[in-house]
Length: 158
Image (tube, rainbow, N blue to C red):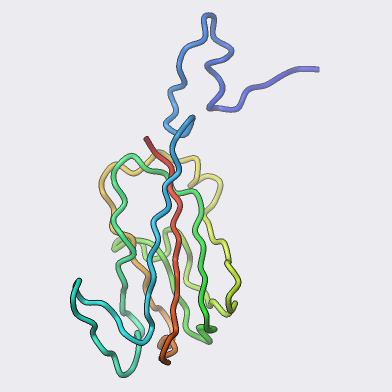
């Protein structure tokens, strides 16, 4: 029976073996966590903006800056409240749904993975630093004391 090699393992077929040319081989995983207090949104490091109406349609929340050379692996959402009919997308300024297309999130205290297509996962790593944004696309987010939304973004890179 024939033995084949994954793209990242092709170097094993070389004589002599040469190092892999793919950044994904042996890459280090990195998780970027963003915690959003739905009842008190941060506008800088020492102030809390009390929003009487919560996050509204079109509002964005910066989840972090990803350095160049990283590849998206998977994301996870976790909330202690259902977001109801509010839909959220996760991406960047150019493509709001790059990592998660706009959809509702109703699971309470259940970590829920989201991801991208296999083709996108195999794409080249980011060339520039990228700010990841959560965008509210339909209906305002729930507003009540103690409500939190946690977003974990896992990337791999050098």
